Length: 186
Image: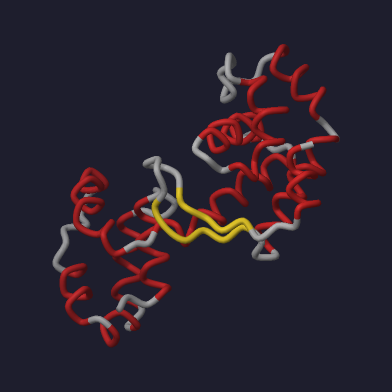
């Protein structure tokens, strides 16, 4: 058994939200893993953390300890907050809604097909006037759509549970009411 904080920190490294060196520092400062899973702890402290180039080896060695589906709601929540706040990454986040919808996340239909599909021909990471004009068309309506999905995730109406058909997609239970499903597709 791996403690949730250890799984979360390994996930953070695997998704490049935490450096390998920061993980190593956490590993030596927090004894939760040492006391709960000494074998994994030994494996982790034996790893060479001396350079960032060891990421692939880290991934190959430790990805098996992470249930990625547990973090999928957090990943989508980050995208939704980017859309709601219209931060510098909102174009990428809106575009990602299209891809996630096509990865079988049907609860993202409105965001993916009403908004994200319109960005498929743009490099959303580079601001330009044409992209900004399209984004201006989306706001403020897209905010309420993003808040709906965020609410479903926060209320546990969308629950990720395991690997799905696609490499990046996970199976999930959709516990929304019929009215909420219609609202998400309208």
